[in-house]
Amino acid sequence: MSKPRPCPSTCNVLLIGSGGREHALAWKMSKSKRLGTLWLSDSKNAGLLALGTPAPLPIDVKDTFRLQRWCDSEKINLVVIGPEAALAEGFADALATRDRMVFGPVKAAARLESDKSFAKDIMRQAAIPTAESRTFTSLESARQFVIAKDDACVVKASGLAAGKGAIVCENKDEALEALDRCMHAREFGAAGDKVVIEEKLNGQEVSVLALVDGRTISLLDPCQDHKQVGEGDTGPNTGGMGAYCPAPVIDSKTMALVERDVFVPAVDTLRREDEIIYRGVLYAGLMLTPGGPKVLEFNCRFGDPETQPVLARLESDLLTLVEAALAGRLDAVRADWDPRAALGVVLASAGYPDEPRTGDAIDGLDEAAKRPGKVFHAATKSAGGRVRTAGGRVLCAVGLGDGVAAAQRAAYELVDCIRWDGMQCRRDIGWRAL
Image 1: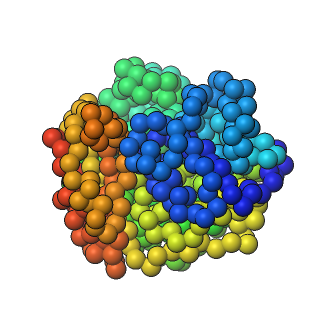
Image 2: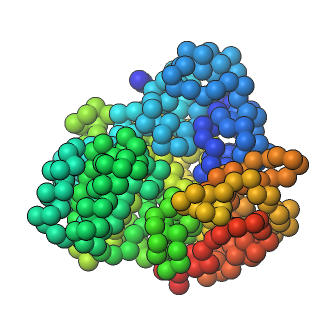
């Protein structure tokens, strides 16, 4: 599709998604003087409901005709897609018109995230530095490969697995168990029909996000997140227990290298080899190895919980940046940032990540709202006159300060205001920077 017309001076927005990332996006868009009506695909998240109006129909890609008609009738000028599943299902393809912009790549481009095997193929074509890997659709073939190599490796469900489909294995037995979890026990559902087995890289992980308009790439400040549930980055992987931005582990010289060797060839190869024009957010999860940065994965949307500290620092109008990315004129705008660091701490339910308990009443939100920083809602609902837990990762408390240590103190001051039965969080978010 050709480039859409620019949004009018007053822009009506439909936001798809229901988590902490979407609350952060809604919060930042609500500060724009250009925002008209903000429609929400979710009608439960208590934080989102304070900022917008729930759409009166299910947001279902299988019923695109009804959804398109509703977008037309409400004069929706911009659709912002938060979660990866909606991109993989083709919401961007279904809702984009000459008069309606959609922030998020088309389904073919979203395969960079929804199909790790496809992403590896693109990286090989583009000569992007990444871990050596093999892809398997047969459990027995994958088992034989692991037995023959007997090295530390990472077993990844090739499809979308809500951030939990990558299993780091230190030995052969752990790798065989991971294969059984993916392909036999079907722990990750259809995402495990195909697995990628790759070498285990050593170093520190860092996340680099960029706005992309098809050709121009605008890097955002780097982040580090903490995926493991336990302090000291131990225990099983989660969707993320906290993040901070900027990450001092990566300097400007390395960022320039990442732009040249990762983002530019990825965008160019999609356009050249597959005729895919990438517009939206492109996220590279990197390992800073002794041999230089290598790509662990691509995501095709803002990360969670990285988005919360990133947008807490953004001083520019988010709607203006989004429109520039979709109109192919990122080179004409500039993102301005608060010079302070931001750090977010995820507050999770009892039982997370295995069997999170829901329905617990949350206390202290009013007290936290009086302090500097921001508490973003990820999985909450209003019931019985109280805000209650509604999932695993419930809130993300973001503090800002002159450096990571000061941001950490500010974030935990917010955390200490909030309580519910069984609440859990890590007390060491940011330790790698400190």
